[in-house]
Length: 117
Image 1 (cartoon, rainbow, N blue to C red):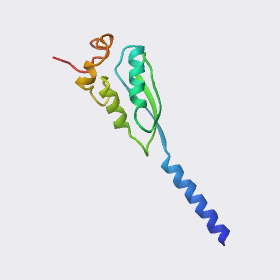
Image 2 (cartoon, one colour):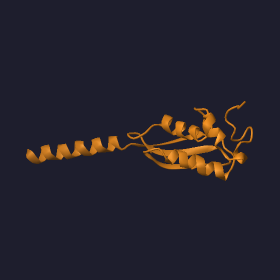
Image 3 (tube, helix red, strand yellow):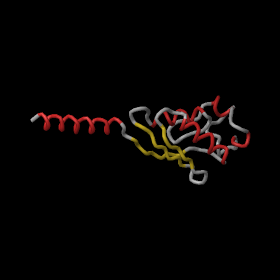
């Protein structure tokens, strides 16, 4: 009986730890233009605690991210990218981030996620 109880506790503990370390993969669009944008977008996503993978495709403008749902969420990743100056399909770029972009990334319709006056 003790062995059965012990086995049950171990099983429940392992199931609980798997639920706590859920890794999710998501994709979404990020406006960008070039390889420099790629580096900055991926760096912004990876700067979030819990993000283990970020790869942005220059041609498709799609980023793939893998992250631990117990440490972060998709909204935080979108926000970090927008603060770097890039518009995602959910969040507009911040004006401060956009102004800090290299000039080659400020091409209207490419990296220009917001209209600046």
